Length: 168
Image (cartoon, rainbow, N blue to C red; front, side, top):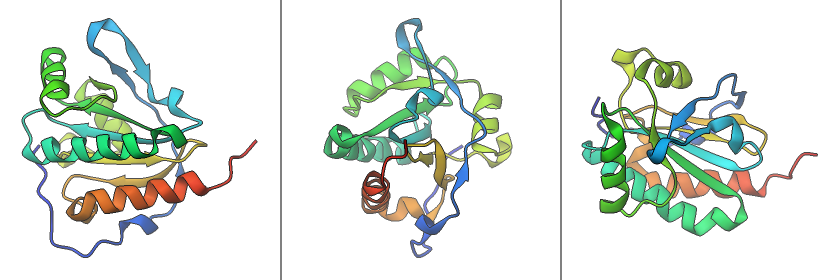
């Protein structure tokens, strides 16, 4: 499940928008849960990660930086770990990599259903980006060229989505 970046030119932001047909319930430390359906109304990035993955250890702090930059304007993020026994691992990850947005976990079959991949196709980090209405506007599986220039790409798509008019 270790995603490797490829050397393909970045152009993934032009992917066709589709309505997200699914959501995922994420377990959080302390016994709480969050449903990604609760994020509708905000621009939201959902990152699937593994706590021991070096690419994930680089990716989530980038998302944290974008959350700090655009959070007040309506950008949110959540991380969903694929680790077994994830609770102490995500707590340590958040502390060690200074991630303040929610980090949790979900069963692999539910994660695969959410990202529309088979378990053998799931590489991390993987990111899905939703607009305020809950439409999937970016789907970046592990190894996607999006991650080659992740900070720039994420900032650009978040800025674009936040500029879109709110629908009543």
